[in-house]
Image 1 (cartoon, one colour):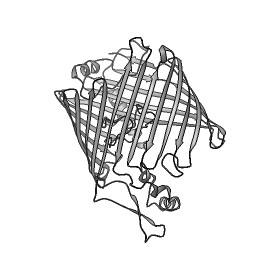
Image 2: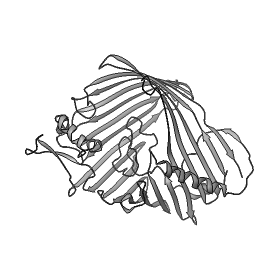
Image 3: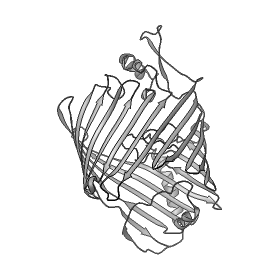
Image 4: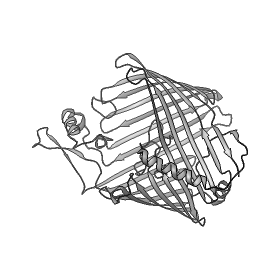
Length: 438
């Protein structure tokens, strides 16, 4: 969450710039449509120019309601998780051809079956940035923004900038990005980037530098970049996106000198038999390789999507049981502050994820999805099978079954194996937008 003073400062900047824009006439006040999509980095400047010369202000809002309930077989007790009412609010202003302001926030009102806080609300700023350029040659974006850095689908070790990690069960969801300044210099079909990233302060310790270059080579795109920040492990990364026939193939590699994590090691001199150490003078390698394939017949009966990915996590443990077999010591280290929950994230060295989905089965309103995520190092994982029915754009009902497996204390079965059945009903409204033209 942002500090209120910082949020007020950014909103004040938006208001001042918008108020400095020339007078305009109100036309096409109300209409329905979809949110303006962000252009992929490096797309042609002609389309950019058309957009920048368009409407001067657009305000948008949508509304969604999620109702869900679940039954967990570990205690055979039905648990009603309640309802979430969500609304995305957006502002897109273009006071001049070379200036654009964009803001987006998510308002969430939740109800639960608990008695302590039956109703809670939260407003979170997801994006807040300003776009500008110098002579249509150097393009700038300043503010809170999602960064397109890695190419992984379920997991992305090369995504070393965004605040939020990819959710393997919802890999296409937008992730929260950092407060940063991006400079982009297109060079034909290639692109050069420089990011200056802030953790909320303008001190040297709070700033990071991340250069990146993207090269288009035939049907492939190669990216190389780095990340530098004081008191953090320096990292270098390389990404590859290509295709083999109709199958998209992607890969990432990351090399770091040292790690930002603290590690647990066996120590016979410790009362617990284990200790917490830093590993700042070692090299760590992470890499991933995956694919995505879609197939659709001419009649539309079979709309199939397959995806799979393998991840090697060099910052994981050769013996992942060192965590699951020492719960008392781990709890002690967490309480005294020598270890954090972030240090315990992704303890395995080998991970695999896969999914298969069949959308609009036989041209009906029914879709099915199967998903699996496994930590091959400690033998734990989770599998999900779901079916959804969407009779319209605004109504979706779904049911599913989730199985977690592995020994007690492992990553995906920390409290033992479980089976859960769930049902969900989602109601959405069509986006409502108010546009003011020049």
